[in-house]
Image (cartoon, rainbow, N blue to C red; front, side, top):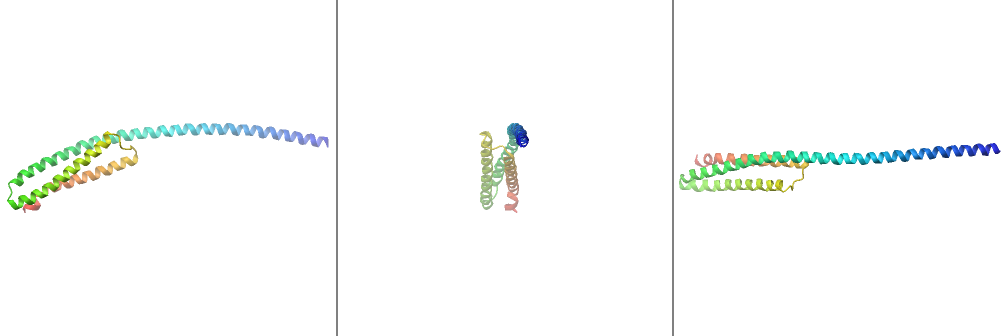
Length: 166
């Protein structure tokens, strides 16, 4: 019986040592995983920051090009409006009244587009824009809409005399 008790004590002692050593390994592994998670989190934050900076630079550059082209188009529309006012002055009274009203509406559209561009430029200048993929998509949408409106204005200016004189 003493041998059974001694054997049982030895088995319990060996099992205790084994379990204790396994617990230490698990703690070391848990610490390593925790450290890896922290490093990965830092890497992700840095990657997001780098991506945001890249998007900001791209959007700012694209905006400057778009702004310059749009301002030129607006200036051209203003010059066209002035030329049309000169032509309207030579038209007969009925046509002059009709054409002046139509031209005034087109001039209002041009001024609205100018204000819209200035407002968007102000947002860029004051860094009020969140530079992300969603913002990039919103910018594309704004540019597409603005260009469409400018094209419509240009077409309307060209067709002003065609619609009313013929």
